[in-house]
View 1: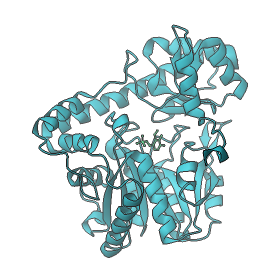
View 2: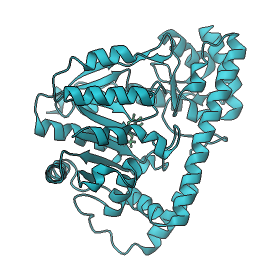
View 3: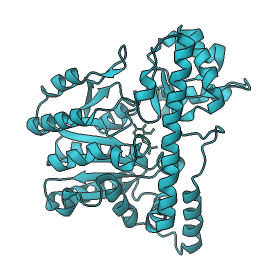
Length: 397
Ligand SMILES: Cc1ncc(COP(=O)(O)O)c(C=O)c1O
């Protein structure tokens, strides 16, 4: 049977990771994969996570299955973290939360739910977007197109073009949005733009799927959820894919949640039942470990305060790295060509380099960035800022 299969080339970023692993140069620099690194270049286990994990293991009395919805204290925490304590959609019972294997699991389940509700729905992702959006959402059976989002030449959002495209969509289309810290561009809509977008989505009857993978790493947990809270207040239906991979540093534990905001409480419960059924058919129940760690942090005021402080330190460090890199590039290039980096948010920026420059960066300077020239600023150790600026000057000057 397997002789019918064709070899599948590794996905772009996975190929970049493999090339990096195979490079024997002592000063190779990985700015491809999307993980946070501290000043020494490590992706640390957060102290609050480490303490919660130890406490959780000490008191765990069983490894029996978690229920179909996953860890319920975790789900309650995610609902509050994303939507805020007093959100009217929560008060109206319009919200349901299912624990998922990472943000990826949430996005896939969201697309599966849409297929169940309205087979033939078209999904639109931003151009550019995180490359995995297309297979995750398309793999569920939705046709995936794109809407304009970013003008690489000016380093700004193509907002008018975005609205024009969305304004032509049939009602019920699924619009995939990045809640904050847009990946790969680092360019987020302003609050005024979000308001305008929310009005358009409502007017046209479009359904957003908001990907919230970087909450806390842009401007802080509440500010980064401002847009999703606005959408949940002003629209009847909304899907959210949330991830704890970055905000808790729990990447390999696969911790995420799908949050459904439905028109009313009964519809939300129907969605929850459908999601449980869809999960059951794919992987049955979610893994417990990472979600139990998050629930332990959430349930202990001291650990929660510690986590909040650690998250804020990560956010501040990324913002400082943005300033440093923009300043170093200004010195190297003698121009403000890359000044946009300082004003953007989250882990990534898109440098706007040609493929040949990306390849030279790798071959001549042992610096690995994604093929679309996305650079992981959160993965850049302080001592390497000048080196990166010089390398960029050499390949893109
Ligand atoms: C934009 C975006 N969405 C979702 C995810 C999902 O992350 P995970 O499945 O690791 O939680 C990522 C991870 O890199 C991402 O960059």
